[in-house]
Image (cartoon, rainbow, N blue to C red; front, side, top):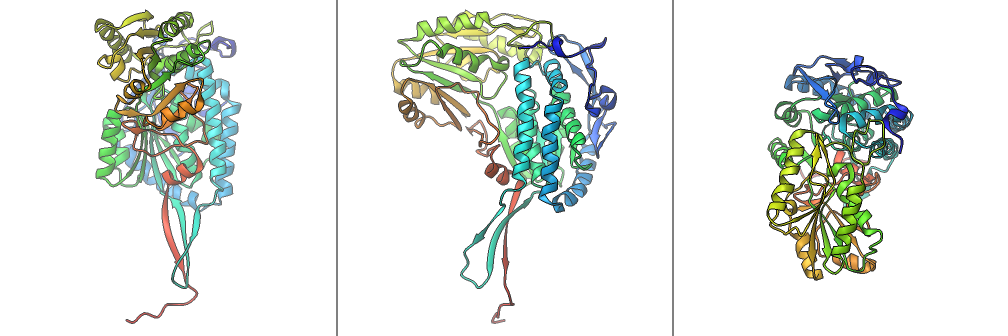
Length: 509
């Protein structure tokens, strides 16, 4: 895996040199927001962009105000009406060019992900490649059939068709800032909508500036994508309550999602909520013990555990648990942790900030104090938290009950399938489930008894692909889905019924 320094140059002060995309040059976006196709000052002041690995300030981004949201919504709607009236070929062409731009400028964008979000190089490269694929899929979405011919008892043609909702608000988190923005932005634009995007303030360049830069390069008409960083309590809420937005696409914590859902319902907006998870990986007694610990390590430690799909609970059959835990701990101890933008390749980067690090450490310490055994990790240096393995975790422990969002693998042992099912179901969440077994059909039968939006037999829980419908049940979301043409049509269009007669009917009036 190449290191950051192999392919990127850093000037003094730690700011990345722009090598291609005009709007990725810090001189363009410094202390500004992206409105109507230009960088300008926002009414909410400025916010520092800080590397979690080094503490360096990489720059400052402008913050929007609620008044900026209202003004942006007005101009976005004006642009949207013209965009929706254009041929689907025009929209598809812009999305295809955007996919090409992501690919052409991958190295530059990967650098920002490494520096700003703490993403390891492989994870950052995957994000950029996924962003390109999202745009290509969205280009195809622009041309899919968008209606049906309906039966009617009347002498008329009866059809249904899907029309753009108009204005979509996208609120994205820090952990996969590009993917969790573009997966809503790209299909919304392809279907004729305009978008107001609020990236997380900790990853505004990766999750916001890059999208503005890519779509500017791709030729998206001005006003269709407005990038509005800001505080959730004012800008985030105004994105929901401003009259023009019709659909809210939110990815984040379950607590914040409840607030978004409440506001959206009060203002009669549709909200698509992709929230947290406490996902189980069930390791049955007939699992391949040579490779199962690697699968478990990937599921719990990828991107420092800061993924909603991460394996938060590893449920292991008691007959193989000792061997499994020993091998998992060995793998955890061998993983390299450090600055993804440093001089050596690393597999794990830093946690996003001190608040998150302290929460992870508190959960680990409380769980060990309550009787679990620390087999690996449990230490940190700055924001770098060592991959941690906890054995003999019980359902009452914090590491079992809570979404940790850190590189922690809690191991809970079970004796019977019924016990494994009871443990897996002992959570409010229902996002992703993994089952490792030598009998695939047995795994499917087991999955039928555990509510989950996504199931992966003989794989870990962190899985996603652009064309698939992705989402959770329970506290993991509202049941709406991201991805796949049908899901995106339902998410970002309104269904309209139309009838046509060749002549006027004769009514008894």
